[in-house]
Image (cartoon, rainbow, N blue to C red; front, side):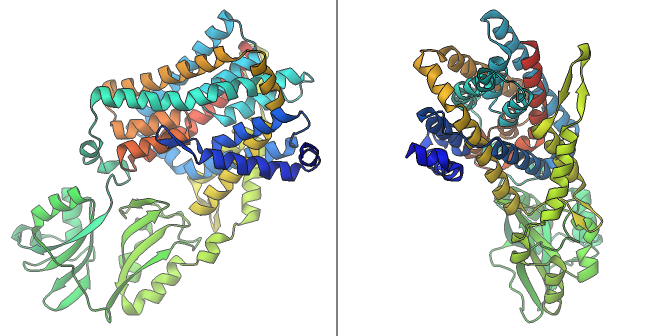
Length: 541
């Protein structure tokens, strides 16, 4: 069987992938290790025989694809991260990573550890695969096989403690501070995602003061975080337009989070316990996909749907998250929007958004290739460092930076750089699978030899302690000193370690989607910082 796998790399790849994904689906301590288990499956296969190796090209393709798509998905979140809250979070994460790199160098000099091992320890303790890839690329011209295996072995030994260290830090501190996530989330509507599921209510207008101005003016003045859909006056149901002036006795439908709906309803009138049913011969509603490239990348305010099409968007769903459709919400390919419009206009509205699932399933290969190619070229540019040293962003950093840039731009004329959410996620996971399988199989024999020699326990302990101390310090400083919400800080610390398994655990603990905001805010900067810091450790240790 070993000979068959050694002679058929493609069969070996899928054997490692299937084994790793099965292992990754097993739940331990309330979470699953997920895709990272492919690395350990690869190590297991590689340990059986040194001939079980995958071509280096598979590693390069997987890595470049993964980091480029991460950049595309995170580009706009990265730009938004430069507001006051985002700068605080990113500054905190950067200082924490610098401290972690400093501690790693001190350990390297004290024990001592060589440069490749120290860089792998840092990448594993911070659970960052692109950082490991950057180290391997720097070493790729080395003729010494041991120097190429050393960072992977250190990474593999430190990685499990890295995942567990983050989760343990969350467990300890949330119990110490007795965090009430639901109560805290109720006041965080301005973070751009709902902390609760969206719902709707019907309100009868009894407040005469509200009838003095158009409803949009009241919404802006009172900062109501809700959407007004339609209203009934007498027996007629109409869409609420920005210039609609309500009258006493009107019944209106509101969409939003429960707490926001209750506070808004208290200013308008009385909640009615029945839905605002309208005549479907005049008005209708429909959920539809955003598949039109001319719509993707534009905000709802720019689209001006009420004025252009007489339609109102009441909900936007992206992946598993619901967004309240505010004027500054930028639509993306693959979003599902819930639209209310006149029945005669519904076909026109559908054509406007596209609503083609087939179009979303088709990837624009030329645009993907151009963007990825530009990223690879960027990665070849040498970056000068003090002392005459140079670094290259390589297959990890170059595509990531280009992805962030193009993701932030969104579109150039009719060219849409981003991919639909589902397509991006699928290709991203496939790229990561290729990389982890190759790294694991190509280092498995050296990894097994290290453990058989009774070595590596020190790296396991150091990796776990380093991860726990960095995660706990970041949580403590961010929550206690910078006063960032714990709901968001869970995502920040997961993004600091670029750890999807930790993010999944954080979302389960918080019971809402707010950790995603913290994760997206710091993930790009943390990834770039760790790519550079790991290579600096490689040079200095």
